[in-house]
Image (tube, rainbow, N blue to C red; front, side, top):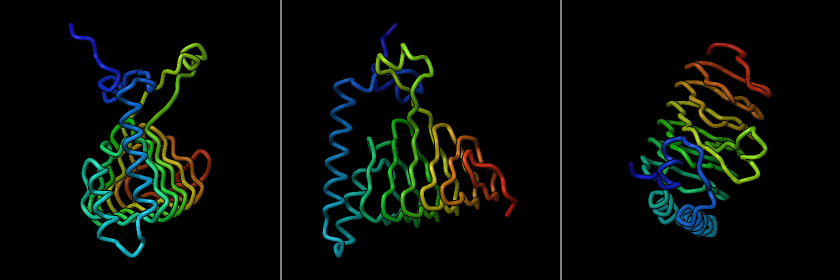
Length: 185
């Protein structure tokens, strides 16, 4: 039986050590690209898009306002007409799949990473990651946080400041901490 690498464990949602040398290098590479994007001439939209397309695993069409940060980049997939205002952070240790026509207000955080509740494991530096899926025609309000393992259905709205720790059905408005259904749209 072949022993899994830390990256393979990460990609499979198994507990892994993010301190692994390869994972550290890949995060550094992504940080460099984010820094390049954030420092890029704002009037050169074509050049900015080129950096994002090189960073992301898949990219339909996207405009992201600086500042943007991610962990790996290659785990991010966005559809057509993706727009993110200033301060988007995507912690993409697992896949982050975003549909078409998605809007992110300033300060949105999407995190696939989590740490164990067991303090002994936490002290060892173990973490795990679970995919996030955001459907099409979703609006994510200012300062909202989407946590690991969450799926947000098409045509939904995540209110400003919401912390989404459970799946959101299609055509739903959620708000609060933790986010709760406000109404069907």
